[in-house]
Image (tube, rainbow, N blue to C red; front, side, top):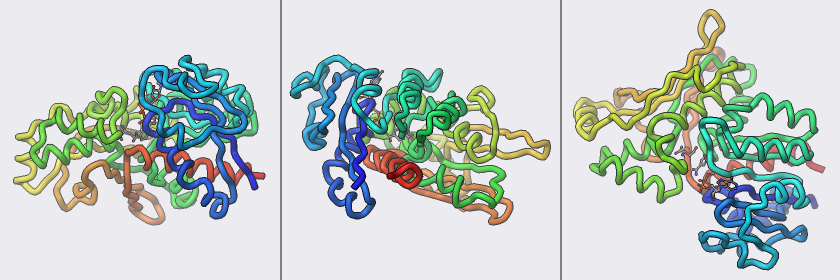
Length: 346
Ligand SMILES: NC(=O)C1=CN([C@@H]2O[C@H](COP(=O)(O)OP(=O)(O)OC[C@H]3O[C@@H](n4cnc5c(N)ncnc54)[C@H](O)[C@@H]3O)[C@@H](O)[C@H]2O)C=CC1
Ligand SMILES: N[C@@H](CC=O)C(=O)O
């Protein structure tokens, strides 16, 4: 029986979600998926770090209080975040990288991914920064070191989008896509329709674990812009940089705008899109659009996301599901590990 040794880098909502899944389901996975997972290290700038090559108790990790330096209270733990040691020297076969998304330069997560890949360690990540900003370099690094770099959760959380489009739609000739690609902003627009203020709706999204560390990224469209770059580069073979994508958000939409839209049978949605032009170039944008309620994306509510792929052979193919959430995103990491087991498993 294969048992993967994993190190968790960042121990916020998503990686705690993964630890919880491991605590609850590891025994079942051995039978249903053909492998188990052992956590051999965890590091977090706020909580500190811990390494145990024989394996850590996932239940005990999940129960760790969210207090500065909390790992120092566990035997062998320290209040210091020994990121490099945990990544390179905990004996892990793979790291689950889930620190904050930095939309400007992708750091320090990109460095964490580099450290792992250069050491021959697989990377699964939900962090959008490294892929949108340094994806080509990291994929090449992974290839040269014979390991995997998987990032299904970077777009639409646990809802399968990247592998689905890359594998199941291969040959269907994807020509573009448009979608609701941010859970927080869609949640905010939905709750404002119910009468909540913008600020209260953002605060709820933070509490539910949907929002970025800085929710400005969610409401100003920067998070969707990263996702548009990831999807366009992956599926349209574009070489888009973040600066190529015109971007605006939802913060200027007032309660009156929302009420007026409802009265007119329409809904505001933050839409990320990209399409291949006749000259072969790819155009992409992020903007709030007023959609008639008959539009397929108009009825997508709350933290649910949806993306519609425009294909030459099938027409529109639309996928909808959770776009954010701790357990939902942890599932994406599991799906990456399953993909690694399928391609690299012993
Ligand atoms: N929460 C969600 O619904 C989704 C999140 N993501 C992405 O997954 C990643 C993790 O998300 P969450 O767990 O919700 O965020 P979070 O903010 O709950 O957790 C991030 C953790 O990383 C730690 N951290 C920050 N800088 C660090 C550093 N330099 N070294 C070590 N640890 C560091 C923080 O202390 C925090 O505990 C983010 O990049 C986010 O954009 C992607 C899809 C959905
Ligand atoms: N903050 C993001 C999390 C997933 O990427 C969102 O709300 O969609």
